[in-house]
Length: 372
Image 1 (spheres, rainbow, N blue to C red):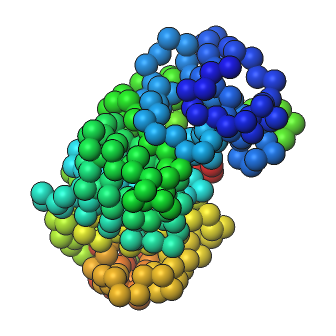
Image 2: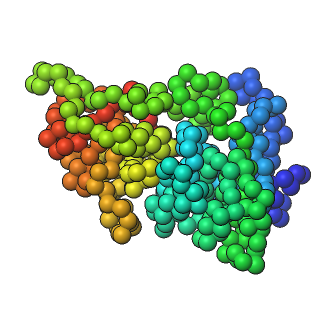
Image 3: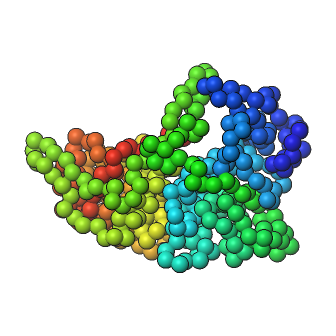
């Protein structure tokens, strides 16, 4: 049995009966390894990849293992972190916890990677405790030192300097993080991002309680740049043709796109509030739209005292606003620009109310619900 993932003796008691190869839709898959456990320690799990394919995640290289190997939860957080990082050309860090981002930060100008990581972590330092950190660039020793200053579960990046690996392995200096797992991923450019990209090997599989399943295309977006983000417009008998009249700043347009890319990996109903390249708050898994906004704002008030205010921030919503109430709640907190899909019968009324509140509205060409 392979020990490439550093599995502990726990697996000898809890390995499921998984074959070395399987076939899905005529595509052969080979087993990478048995996992430490699935979602919970009493669930067995195994990890597979398309046979013969070069995989950005399926070919993870373990540079440093913890006290035991990877679990399904580790891999899910790794995948979702890299699913955010893949969209950015500038350095970015995404901190994931329970398959939701607790903090994301994008480099501003020539900002050092250590600072980018610290901003991502400190978006929600309480949630970031024991999280998975993903990067889209090489991690240096200075950043590794900052990562080792608080407890972390995994760090994944396309590469690490030798000095960074030495920091991660300095167990005398960093005793609290001696079990941190350090993983080198493949080329993030190989991951599909936009509608039209080849996604045949990235289809999702959802298995139901009776064993039946749904196979679907992955969640991709049509938004490639800020020029693809149009002003919100709609029409109704009561209002006629309506277009958002409130302007957004160049930085807000960039932040809107950042919020949208992050929201692709947020469990719906989800909203993401961003300011100056970092998440201010993330509302996740709510059953109603305004509840997701309220949750995000409540998180900010409870957790982020002393940090930058919401004033002038932007917000992405993964579904349309059925009523003006969510925009009203966001505006009252300081949000001044939003992006969301169209589709509500009250789109025109929402746009008019946003203009009254001084909120610029933009409509994305797709809904991005994520029911993971």
